[in-house]
Structures are given as structure tokens and as C-alpha cells.
Amino acid sequence: NAGVMQNPRHLVRRRGQEARLRCSPMKGHSHVYWYRQLPEEGLKFMVYLQKENIIDESGMPKERFSAEFPKEGPSILRIQQVVRGDSAAYFCASSREGGQPQHFGDGTRLSIL
Amino acid sequence: GQQLNQSPQSMFIQEGEDVSMNCTSSSIFNTWLWYKQDPGEGPVLLIALYKAGELTSNGRLTAQFGITRKDSFLNISASIPSDVGIYFCAGLGGTYKYIFGTGTRLKVLA
Image: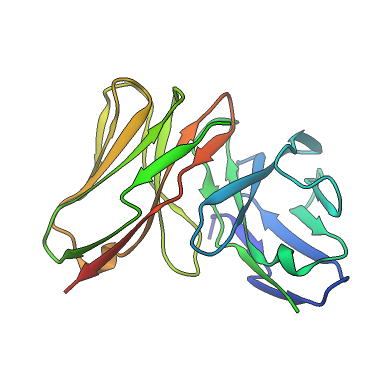
């Protein structure tokens, strides 16, 4: 399967814990985007990364949230000290170049107890 | 900020009927994308449009890039039960950031 791979598909955390969401882009894609989706809503842009660089993090909260896309390995979206309001589906997308159509993974559904 | 309005928000149709939905913006976009999302899955790209006035088909789906570059339309002909899902439009606002609409929820009655 050469598509965008996200894991885990479901993640349960207690308030105050850390959540780590992983995304491996499609083969040949070096641009990664993270989105957040609440039930019955659309996709909200969080952050755009290229290998080893954050290009645009304007949609990501300044505190507790961070993202990286290292030279080797998947992109990671990290949420520290999770709160109930962090519960959502988090989707990763990738593209070959910026501005080209983005292809999505199946998301990580984060639930905070 | 840029916003995309999709309409209708939801629709129930009979199997075999044609479906029309649209997406409008207050801003000009250079690229329009249409996606379908099934429950529990990620959005799947259906059609990409790159030029004003462009009309592109993918099977029973046809999408158009509006001449004003502020809107786009998606039509589904002869709907079937597996067409159920949420359809999202996305417009390219700038060089890399796509703005997504709020979705049209389609339900097909057999």
C-alpha cells in the first residue's frame, strides 16, 4: 500500500498525558500537512512541513502542540498535557510539491478521558 | 480569513437521481479539489480542477471550475447507495494552503 499511513488509528489518553501521532507520506511525497476534524465539521489546517522544516504552523496552537518531519522516519504530531478539548480526528495529508493535490491518510481518532 | 461555503449542507435523494452541490468563496482560487469522506476514513480525492471554466469528469462525477474562480460545482449522475458520504471542496488559497469547505452530507435512499 503506497498511500499515506497514519498510526495509531485510535488513541486514548488521560488528561495530562502526551499523545504522539505518526504519519508516513506517500512514496515520493516530501510535503506533509496536518489537519484536525471535529464531528460534523470540516478539516482545519494545523501545520505544513517539508523534510526537516516547518513551513507554516499558523493553524497549530502555540502551547502544547508541536510537529516535526525528520530526515528519516515519519512526521510526528505531538500533543503534550492533553485536555478534553483535544479530542478529535487528526488527519495527515501529503503531496509531491506544495500546492499539488493532497492525499490523506485514514486519520488518528484521539479520545481524552 | 478565507472561507468556503458549501451547499447544501445535507441532502437526501432517491437512488438513481442526479445530485448537484456547490462551493462558493469570497476569494479567488487557483485550484479546486473535490473529496469524498466515508465514516471512519480519510478524504479521498475525486477530481482536481486547475483552470477557470474547466469541466472534468470521473465516472459518474463531473466537476466544474467556475468562471469567476470563486466557485466550483460537483454533479453526481444516477446516484447509487455507495455514493453516501460527505463531500468536501477545497480551494488553493496561495501557493500551498488549501481551504476546506464544511461539507455536503449525502444520503441515498434505496
